[in-house]
Image (cartoon, rainbow, N blue to C red):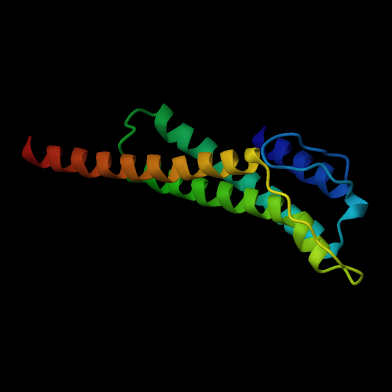
Length: 146
């Protein structure tokens, strides 16, 4: 089911029909981006989708029982990295496109508060991964004593 959703999400993005309104995405028509900007946005969307797949794997491990295992820590770290990378690429795509256009004159970079909030949420996942990593270490240490 998730694979079909991922394929549909990527296909609609590539065809320009998907106009996301979540997170830091400033809606731009596909024709406003040059090839490099469109590629950056596509890589960003792909990184976000891969992060969501990683999140699904984390939830599967958590569903099995013990939340304090190394797989959860690695999964949270991968999710945080992929989500951060994806949102940075999506945010930077219009700027990259403007800077690499042949007729680029004056370029204005706009960063909104929602961009900072989205990246702050990604940073929270790094902190959560560190906390779960410490919990895994403590749980392993406690198992040695018992």
